[in-house]
Image (cartoon, rainbow, N blue to C red; front, side, top):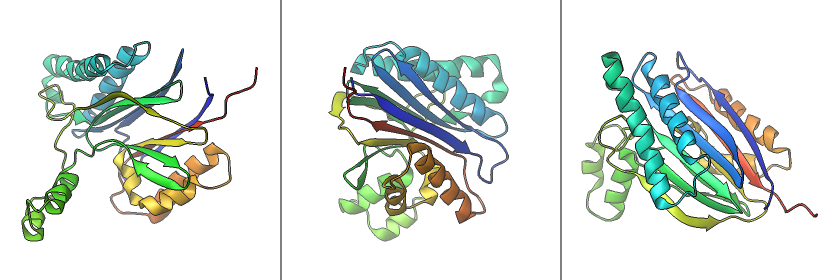
Length: 249
């Protein structure tokens, strides 16, 4: 098995509190990477992201990551929020994105709900792997296929609205990728909440391409977001995972 180097970090941005939750959890055969971006105001967002994140970790920490296992993890996360809302009605309306990526034997599988990002940096190219369940992404696709014109697209509403979240209710869209995506030595996976959109994809790729330790590249991402000094900068959580060459026996 190829060793996997990881780094993780987060910033609050201009928000009053941190509603993101993230974890890097070693498995016997690899590593589990999870981010969740909570919403709901006051403490509810951070409650939603923590409950969903902890539930998916508990479900996937030792599982085979088949499609059924990924679906069960998504259900466990949603059930955790439903139970919390039943106990405390003040939490009603909270929700969270959820992205869990599992790396085993140089193979990647994931489940995704919402607009948190799973990206692959390879040979100088940064590519998004998971679906984007935001209104903006849906509108762009409608325009691309000719189902909607630009005027209709502008009338749809805020682009950052979400089409699917984990909320303890019906989850409209769940992306489950159980067929493994092959990884190569030198690949870097970026798992992040949408606060990273402050940096465009070209700049993100340039920062990941730097000839520096992985931790320095991760900190450079957070520092670049901070320097942009956006007045409503969202929370940002980032996990980097680099596939290294197998160690010789």
